[in-house]
Image (cartoon, rainbow, N blue to C red; front, side):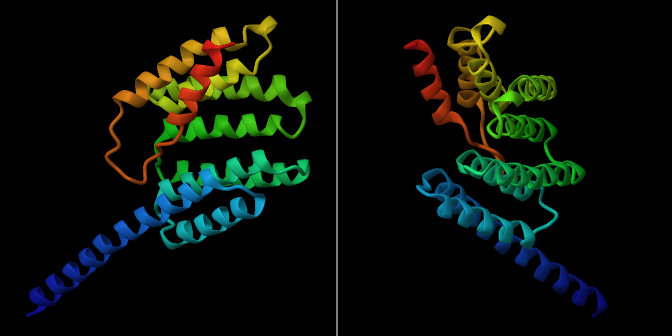
Length: 213
């Protein structure tokens, strides 16, 4: 009888977990879609608020903290107030660190950290040299951990693209990074719906921009 009760409890827990996962997948997918099509700051902040609720519902999932930080970073790029930009990025940095502490994919999280550094430059152009270097160093670590991480290669391309030509930047030097990113996007297969998957469309846009420069 005792064994039957334990078995019943385990089945109940397993059933609840199975039901929760598709719900999380759907909520994250919908929120990211809204983020990428947002036309106003209010819509962006609404996406952040929604992702905060999703992440709070499953605090042991590093992917949810990743997506929350990603939403914040994207929102920071559209925020005009420099102080608020930094505040948003400070919150995102805490979430990246929490995701690392949960044992999340280090290559992906380091790439996101580099994206955050690029966001810091938007606050003040005088930060460019410092944060561009920090982003490049962090992306090198991400690529060393996973040479097939498309987002790391894409962001490296972005870093080079926005670096002055006299310092080795510009479209010509950025293009190989975007091509490598595209190779990785083409070859990658997402097995977990909650895993990072963004960047392919903008990589194609950057390849076109570099080739037509």
